[in-house]
Image (cartoon, rainbow, N blue to C red; front, side, top):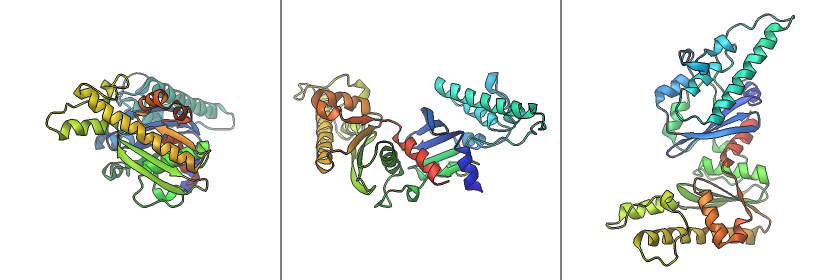
Length: 323
């Protein structure tokens, strides 16, 4: 019964949460439609508890400060009120939550106005369903008491040859890419770490590689040496000269050109194995690296699929399949 109820929830509005190594990555879905995404810092345990507790957030101000069980029959309005109190919510999210809340209100009003039905009684508010994937066990534990959570684990991802220590983020991104563009598929994640993860046409995990990403390489040079400066990725405006005549550009050159050469090598090897295999790229450095690839290796860049939300698409598919 619980599984059936969860499946019904996923036909309406629900949340996806990827807990990364340093931040929380969120997505708001309306059924199978991805409405918006946003990031936050880790939330205090007290706030997480409030997200699933009745009676919190009803004292807020403005349009969002209305108790869910008073306005929409407890169908999630209070949870939206709580969410709205968090900082840095993007405008698109506010619009999505407002539309969801309006839809709930209209549904309740329609039921109450039907001649054959009696007014909908108030009931405890139900937080939006939450699909969760995490690479940080301590953070996962904080969300276990959320009343409407489903934690995705490796054994729920229908890839063959998965090994026990494979990161759930890599597995979900690979599955999301495969079900979206077909197998075989190679996923490049240009984040804190630069990772390559591949699967063949039979959905067998082929494996991959992990190396420090651009920012991590630059940071390690600044932290682990005596005289090299600390550089940030955001300071890099354009491709540096390959043979640089100053220290900052020499550091940029070493990191950037070897990263690009590594990407080129992996992609070319992939296409030698699977000439029609797709390649997708995600991660915070994806646009910067794509820009560099377009300048140095335009033939490769033209075949890359840019999709930052691969993990969320993988979560969406898994969430439906496991219910």
